[in-house]
Image (cartoon, rainbow, N blue to C red):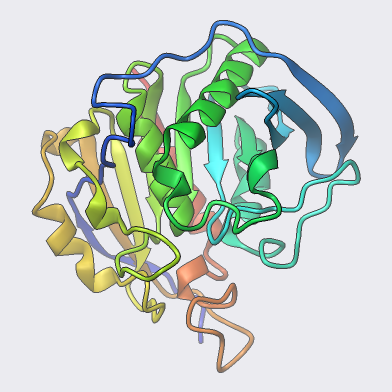
Length: 290
């Protein structure tokens, strides 16, 4: 497949996320103080452990940029278990994912980036699968990540970016922390229900009040994330046209003629389109910088 790229659709749409069980619909608050330790520094940045709920810690890889354009909380897809350690490890499931590629590309472009692992109490289970991304526990963990980003640079606006099931977390935080999240980007969000967790259609779309960019690949053959659902999702929007946008990319390529339907060498992960995905994100952030 040639690497010719063009945007085949650019329409408006909006995703949201339903109020978490036990949280209600009122905006949640970010803690003023956070207790965190930098455990090491490796090719994947600082390995940071943040204390969140009682006895629970949340690990992140953190890359800081000298430019300070914005801060990003980045949510990988699947079960969310990145496999972080002091040597900068990333497990095979995430090693060549679009999330990992964007992690470094965003930092190169001037963003502070915190890539989120599953919290300590979810490392030996199914990670962030099932309904954990919609729980108040997950919301509390990420509140401390946002607080940490503020400590590192209090002047930067915070955006959330998520891929596939990670898009659920990104949308969730945008809905719950409208006073603290500047905007959100959803990449290949999950549209088809299965036993691993809810879909983006479970969202209370009216809860999101910040700018939102939704990006999918026109030719994605991942059954769980169908670009054909874009218009259906768009009909459930509520924000003004200036605050929401959807983009369908096409092109790129793959080195494997029969990649897995949702694999890293296919459209679901925007294979060979990292720069195009980054440019769309960067342009959208610039558009809503004020």
